[in-house]
Image (cartoon, rainbow, N blue to C red; front, side, top):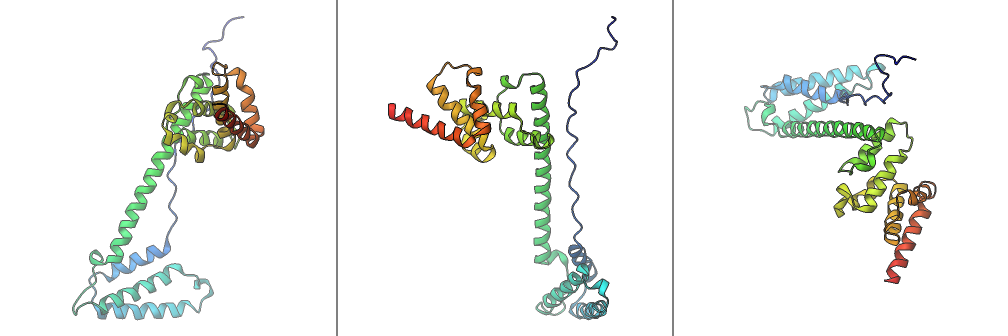
Length: 256
């Protein structure tokens, strides 16, 4: 039989699609406030008071129509005219409205800039996690995961792999993280990372790591295959596995 050309390639799972920026919901109230501020720019107290009366008249007219009863933008515009009216009444005579000197406007702009920066940072982090999940997926397919040390953020990459699999538990990744946590490998050399792992990893993974750590102290030269039962116990009975690890730790301390 002749060998087909080109040679067949082993099927691999496709990489995750790029992380898309979430679409920001339309804020009608904000749109209304901004429209009022653009219109009010350069107005004095008298002009703003007249615009306020017009807005109140429109609000009364709209209240007669059921389909306009929930006009979010209209209510926001009326409230903003009322705020600007009070602002100019309290100001010195001849003052005109300027958004650049409006403290409320400047605070809102600062908050929007901060929120945009937070969204950008979240997108960068999501992209980083997705890329690391792709990398871990490639390593597991090459059977090279156990030769890799975990690094900061791999708990999130583990969650991403689980999400992609529709909630299916990533047993090999969980076992890899548990062994690394038990042996203080990779970023788990840092005590702070080990402490943080308690809130980032699932109870079965934490129980598996705790049990492995105690078994390694009990039998230092035990092979990985000899301790396979620890993963099965932690997966099916994480509380029992954790209790066993605590019991072995107590026995060790009493013996010493």
